[in-house]
Amino acid sequence: MPDMTDEEENFCKKMAKATRGRHAVSDALVNAKLAFGFLDDSVWADGLLVFYEIFRYLEGAMIRLKNTKIGLLPLSELQRTEAFERDLDHYLGKEWRKNYSPRDSVAKYLMRLREVEDTDPTLLMAYIYHLYMGLLSGGLILRKKRQLMQKISPFKAPATSDGNNVTDFGEQNSIFQLKHDLRESMNRIAKTLDEDTKNKLIEESKIVFELNNEIIRSVQTHSSAFEFSFVRQVILVLVVLTIVLTILFKYVLR
Image 1 (cartoon, rainbow, N blue to C red):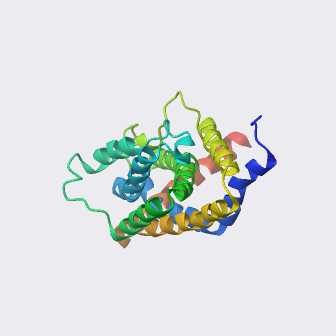
Image 2: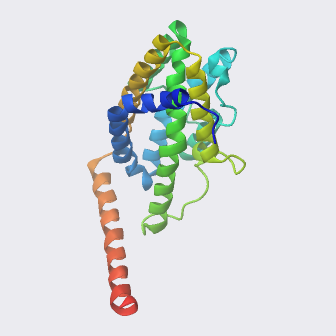
């Protein structure tokens, strides 16, 4: 059992409670936007691209602030910048950086991160905690949904293991353990903070999800023609499954 008091355990729960509504909006946006990426690599790549700069900044900040409380977070196994770059190379080609510049919503997000680092760097822990926990939870779920859709879609070539580096933490790392260690460390650090700083972290957590939602909204899902094509494919898959289940029930299971 984790060696934590009720007080420690409650801090992450307090952050979760304070951000519940914004988190729900974020989940809905991710599922609505990146569902198109289940069968369209360019949409999936755009979803990676909007978060690439955010993780890259945070990982740079972790190095710069390694001698502060941020250095107490267990982040050595969670570094994702190179994984993002390998995935983007796979989907966009090796030359994607040549004409790339962050979009407005990403630039706004980065501006906030710089402001926080300059004025109260402890608050960057809100971004680190929520983004990495999100990747370890929702990110892995989206990957599994995408792999399933690609397997059953008659319109998509068989899925490969390429392009999934961001959500691949290696066989030596248990996802459950990584999440547990991050949560436990955040709770342990919170015990050393005064009430004002903890309240600021909770308020900054709300901003995390607001900024996340802005960049998710910017993910390009292309034209309505693609949306029609995607819906058509999903409907066809569901029809095929219905037929198969009907046959099984009528002739096999009855």
